[in-house]
Amino acid sequence: MPLSGRLRSWAKRLKRDGVTLWFAGRHPSTPWHAKALGAFVVAYALSPIDLVPDFIPVLGYVDDVLLLPGLIWLAIRLIPPAVLADCRARADEWLRERGARPVSRWGAAFVVAVWAAACFGAWRLWSG
Image 1: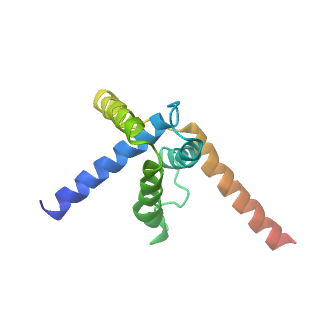
Image 2: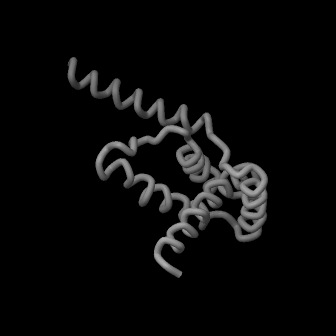
């Protein structure tokens, strides 16, 4: 398989696993530590706003290419296999029916809160 095909396949799995974590967070058999990490990852992955905007050279894509896949990989590893299989099936069905991932308003609020805190901290340093 050519590199472009492998990258496309990897991106689809990553998208599916983001939705899988969304379902795993609501599954009663998911351990609390997997839910906690999964909630953070889902809030960030499904947020319509990036924490580091893509127009910033290099750093704009580091979160999309390294940080997010690493966090998704870690969160997936914390979920029991039976729960993971069930949630992946639900995620596949969701993506097949709706064609798009869900959007996290909490994730958008989280990103806005981080940016607001950073701006407030910078203002305090500059004015103080």
